[in-house]
Image (tube, rainbow, N blue to C red; front, side, top):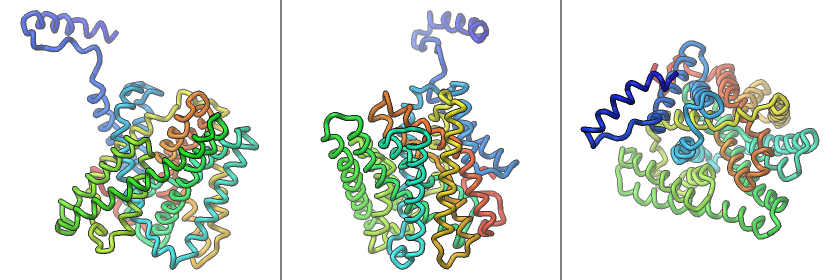
Length: 424
């Protein structure tokens, strides 16, 4: 039917080609960049509509747009177009992880052992229960069960950060959610690095991969982060504080780190998180301490979550995998609630449970981690990590709403519903 409608236009175009030789051939399909741009606009509109009419976080709309129009459903965006957009997604996630790393104040943690204790209980219990669930109930091998636990044990820093900003939340519960998420993310990155070696030890005949790959990832990410953070501070000291030039330096340095990480096959999310932590620790003159990313990072959020939504393998969904993913999420939620309840401390139990609800999101970082691990052994990894990907897919939609509920119940959100970066 579409071919019949386009036939007159095609004939007219071909007639023009006989005289206007500079014209290109009649396009057989819409350019992938044009389609991707339309998809971003659709994602923005769906996110704004859901936020204005239903009160849902905008992130849910972005993910829905990617899911609906991606390869799994309507197929507006092909797998090839997604691969071309991966550098943009890496840059978007990298800048958001940079911001999360900058908010991790290690000095403050040393004076607040209560938060550190609760986070350590959470990550230990979450990893142990998820690992046991994947190993004993799902039947995964020890290495792939460890990979499942590493991918899903922590919260989604990008979702938490954006939901808090959108809600304009401030207060004790909000700060606990941010710091808890940042510390748990750091721990999950350490476990992720170790799991790379475990996967190689189980799948590869060459033990050298099991030893060198984790070292390559850890040392490579730390070295890139340290060099680029030092360069950013060196340049920023020559510029006026909080100026546009400093913002540009921060963003450009982050993109440099993204490029170097991609070039050396080092995870971008880990590199930029470490860069953010280092910027917060070695900036003794507070050169970039109060230099914030521009409001344009909401554009990065749209790009990131539309791409993540389109990347989710919904076409491989089965009811069994769906039930297993729900089981994993229930185990994970119980682990976090139990850890926060058992941790004790000065924060009342109801507020600790709100923190446990607020750290439930599981999103882009988990998806990227799963694909990083699955790419090592594609013939096995994709199916072995399907459980993690489906759990992340479900929490892409439920996680932001749970975080919003926790912030509202804590009474720390602003009265206005118009979050930053929105249309209004």
